[in-house]
Amino acid sequence: MVSHAKPGDYDAKLNNSHHPVHVREKTLANCAAGTFVLRGSTDEYYYVIDSTGSEMAHHKIGSGLAFFPGKYRVKVNNTSTDIEVKPAAITDLQTGILTVQGTTDEYYYVRDSAGTELAHQKLSRPLAFIPGGLNIRINNTSAPVQIIAGKTTELKTGGVVARGTTNEYYYVFDGTGNELAHQKLNSPLSLVEGSYNLKVNNAPMPVKADAGKMNEYDTATLSVNGSGDQYYYVFDKNGTELGHNKLNAPLAFPEGSYSVKVGDQTRPVSLTAAKTTVVNW
Image (cartoon, rainbow, N blue to C red; front, side):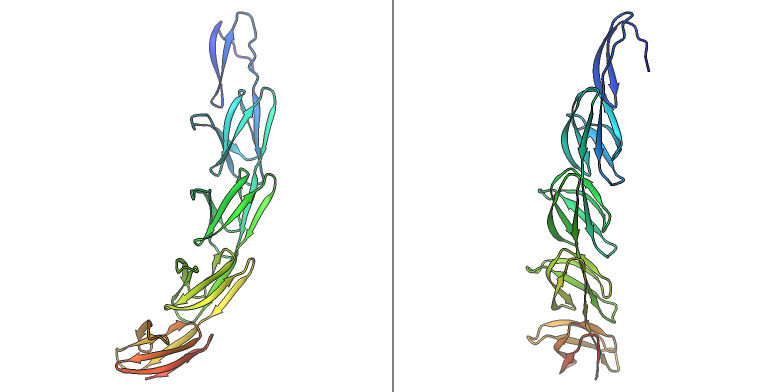
């Protein structure tokens, strides 16, 4: 399209990029633009910004944007790199794709080397990034990944679930005792592959998250039955209280040997995984 203007100096603008133009009488002034395309396979948007960090334009990945020649910066999911648009030319840049696989309805989070969150997405759904090193976090477990242009980087999480018959929660800890996540019994958690500790009513059991697998761990159920509104208390072999509840109300524990106390009386009890042990008081 040809625009008519009086002779003089002007500033042409295209997607917020600028180009000085001097118009002479009865002369056609040409402004040669270039095209930039960020390529990738996800249905996301990329953003082009100027030297001050202001957004100039955005478009879906795979679609081109026209700019006057110059140096700019392209950003996708808060990763960025410098680009140069040349006159009457197409500048291409290829993203890398990240997919964190898992079977739970949870989100994974992507961070840079400084720990700043860049993006998040549901497990098994991809994200596009500028190539480089990133860190994946899910349920406070983490792993480094390397994003490569034109390729898909896949990280497989492992599933862990504690099974039981009570309406209680289980907790997952790392090797230093930091809680990573918790969930109701029979509801799974996705974790980066590794070894962890699982606790139910403060009683621990070792567990593993294996990439691409769901590991199930059965708890045992204890029910102390009796009359009245008294509470029963459960202790480990060192005498540490692990949990308590009203008589006739069950509790879940890992398989093992414990002691039960009601009032001033204490009795030993052995619990078996996937079974309910009833102690009549």
